Every structure is written in C-alpha cells, then in structure tokens.
Amino acid sequence: MADSASEAPSAASMTGAGHTYAVVVDGGRQYRVMEGQELEIDFRHLPAGSEVVFDDVLAVSKAGSLTLGTPKVQGATVKAEVLGPVQGKKIHVQKFKRRKNYRRRIGHRSLGTKVRVSSITA
Image 1 (cartoon, rainbow, N blue to C red):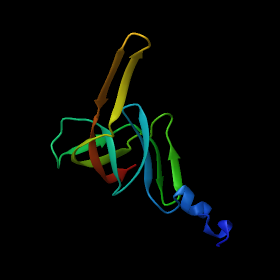
Image 2 (cartoon, helix red, strand yellow; image 1 turned 135 degrees about the vertical axis):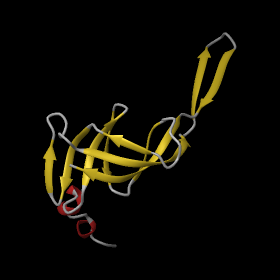
Image 3 (cartoon, helix red, strand yellow; image 1 turned 90 degrees about the vertical axis):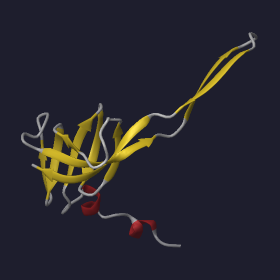
Image 4 (cartoon, one colour; image 1 turned 60 degrees about the horizontal axis):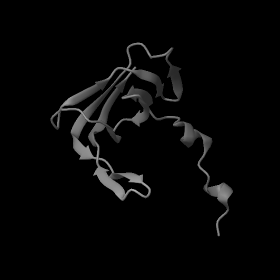
C-alpha cells in the first residue's frame, strides 16, 4: 500500500503554475478554463463551428503570474469554438398530496452548449 503523502499533487500543479488559465463568468456561474478544455455552458442558438467570446474575465494566469480584475480584467477575452448542443442529466420532479390519490412525476433534461476553449488573451 502506497503512502498517501507521496501521491498528493504538488503545490505547483494545484495552482496551475506554468499553465495559462482564466476564470470567466457565464450565465451566473464561474468557470476556470484552460486552452483546449471542453465545457458545457447554458444553451445558445449557435451552429457548430461558430465562435463564442467571453468578455467577463475575472482572473488570468500566464506563466505563473496571476492578474486579478477589479472586478474584471481590462481587455481580457476568452474565445471558444462551439461543438454543438448537448442534453443535461435527466431530473425528475414529483408532486404528492397525501390521502388525496394525487401523484405526478415528470422528467426534464435541460439543454446546454458544448464549447472548446481556443484562446485566452490578456
């Protein structure tokens, strides 16, 4: 059995030292993104292959130097390529009233848009 301390990631890999990443806001949520990363955002009527630009950039890290915005980093943008629409995980909504023989169950899958981050500019 291996020692758990030897398997722990180093502090440099946890902070992303040497990697370029940004923290962007979209749809009220914050995402930490790196170039080449794929993520799901709120649904947009955009064809596959088009481009999405995130202007609300809260922080940018390049080569270990972190730039924090107050509240946004001026001139920083993150560009992403649209891969297409995706459906989210199915959730069930149930209604129930005791002693009234009333039960309803419906399912719902929200739509999202899958994007791949192509560039981060600061």
